[in-house]
Image 1 (spheres, rainbow, N blue to C red):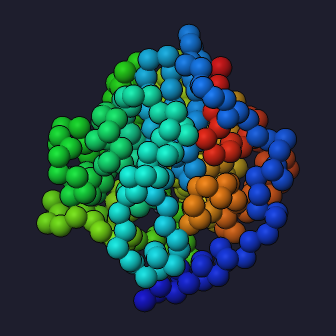
Image 2 (image 1 turned 135 degrees about the vertical axis):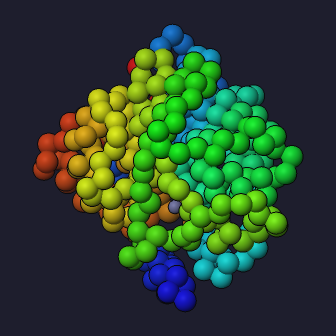
Length: 318
Ligand SMILES: [Zn+2]
């Protein structure tokens, strides 16, 4: 019941929209272009394409990695009422094309198992192949959603593990999910195989939350989905820090995380309203509070350059 109340308050918040929530109010921070066709990264370049929510396609000349892809969006009302919900094949086709996915993806890195991070991964893996690196909860959800994914392609991982994927080295790091109005939403772990498919938003339980350090083409990229003050990231001196800043917890730990990571570039993430269709374009969610984040960045003279990205724009990190 408490969960319902949270979501109803959130629904009210999200419905309060204005022009101020558009990304073009922050034009001077935007990097990347909607180049078509994309040039394949060469030499030591790493190309970052933003997929919306906390989703990114990261490509080097020979390795492609996707983090938290989410194209099958659902309205907040449907989440509140926990209505039946499954991935949309047409939206997945449309937006993998918009993002110019290569024919094969080497790995899918999943920060946690909520629907806005994991629901599209089983059908995407079936189409593009590659290893899914997720939690135990994520593994059982993926297997229940698509029982024809080879079990060895889904890795139930935890902080401390490392993997070589193509020419990239992936380090799994500890991470904490933000609280929403005091509690972690859709909380819980799944520790044994499910006997039925996940068919509703709240079937996608959070599981263990993971952060990733990706070493690729001589660059270090850190990504998480949020965090808590007093729990700084376990990485330092990165080229790009992608930091979840959807709600208060992730925003409050922002300065601490940036100082620890000492990045060349800082990309606050998960700030868009992911309860509206991608075709509406990037709108800051009511909870994102980006002007405050920017103010902190300037006042505290944090290291690195603050940047933002628009949907399906690509930027070369070199
Ligand atoms: Zn989440």
